[in-house]
Length: 402
Image (cartoon, rainbow, N blue to C red):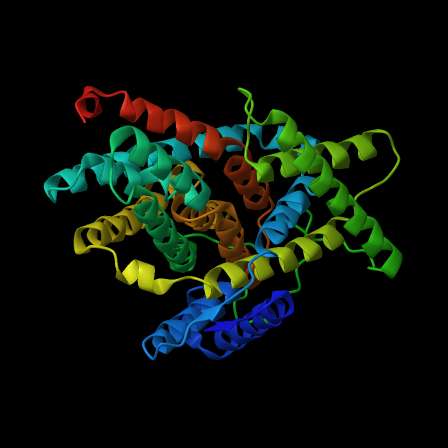
């Protein structure tokens, strides 16, 4: 057993990112299909650790930094959200939300149908549907406990976590190829894929430049810290109430309020490019730690029928993004980027969606709409509508007899 402490894990995550950058730069397949760098490096390390485990060598990481990094990323999304821009994109947010709800319904119907055909408990089909794919590890763990205690489903929590892990991996792998296929059908303004990737310039205003200084860096870091502190306090106040929300939603909400309040009062203008840089760093390190610490042997332990269901769900996600999301969102470049993002949080999580979109936009050019719509829907609405859809399915007479 090899255990890496906080510092060792941070070093390992940094090396994973450098490895991913090298792989994407040198391997044409990864570059052509827009595979995010943390996904490329993290999965390679996870596979190496799986091989080491066959020789009775196991490596464990200190993942205590993972949650703060995820929350810091969502804080930067909130600090980048200009409500004036949101008003302009209100209709687009609504259309994308309808597409997301449609996928939730399809995922659960597909999971239940396949589970029934394969002779499994239909509750397993629901667990391999929107609960773990769109919901992720947190939602999966919560519903897994409910299914075990209320419905007596054995190993529900283990199945939920394994399914969520599978979704996280596939969500980071299929988004780039889907976008590549769709971009061939549209005209990309100013696109020249042969040019070197540009440095990140912000989530919503990629052409706005401003020099980063030590003082401005501390200012932006302070805004992120305030968002984290106030968001955690707000989450504590909402615990046990009808308004209880995941911590990352509270952090994002505080970031939105902080940014727009300071702007409306004329006290401070958020430095969007610097917020974007810190957000990209947090996101990259979060994904690196999450992926390199994946226990792939848990996936290998999945029964073949469950693996079949999850593989079909990944195919359905890709087809839905191509034939539904892309078309209803306008069948243009922004729609292609949105489709890649939808693959990310339709199977995995919002950070995976952002990584997918960044991999695409760094090669083909910015998409302001995509970076406005996906974080708002992925952070604010997905958990709420997912709970509603799940409860509607459980209310069906089909489950009443379970």
